[in-house]
Image (cartoon, rainbow, N blue to C red; front, side, top):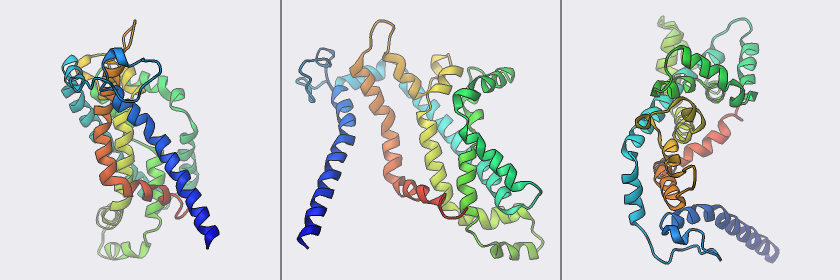
Length: 274
């Protein structure tokens, strides 16, 4: 018994230390955002500012149209999330329920696209978007992200756990595959859809590289692009930069608080059935 208590003590101690290590960067970012510029690079470094500058947040909000950045980010994130839920669920239903020649091989080929880094396909996608004359529009950010092999895989694994017998009643009444998808599969997959939606929203909210390539008008910037507003050619306003990071991540923190159980379920959905 004493041995078990000792083991538990060291386990909890290790978890507390790891927790502090993981929280420390966020705490440093928060306190840096409240420092005057003269205290950012003090040596030896101090975690908390000597003069708390809450007006930094007012200054950064007035320095750039962050309200517009927020609106653009919300539009892009919601559009990508809704789009992926539709395309991924349709694709997952086809790969899990429809029977056609070469289905499994086609699915494996689709999954293989996960192994290709985005940097490899970035230039061809840019050429396509340019041909469609979507450069410097929010559509240029949204359209390439409407499809996801990972999302299709995640939902397919969940759809395969739903008994096929549940769709028989719809088929007996003359309903087709699409009616089964709408009336049976989607209502029973709310948890999996919420999990995928949460992951996609977080990805879309933080997406930086692709918007940076296709957007060059300030009024179309998203929040991740707005963070670079305080990074100049000759210097960086680190306290403002950290403050922008804080206001960017606050919506994500709220999403995480309300949707954290979907993160956990998302880790196990793919392992239920192959």
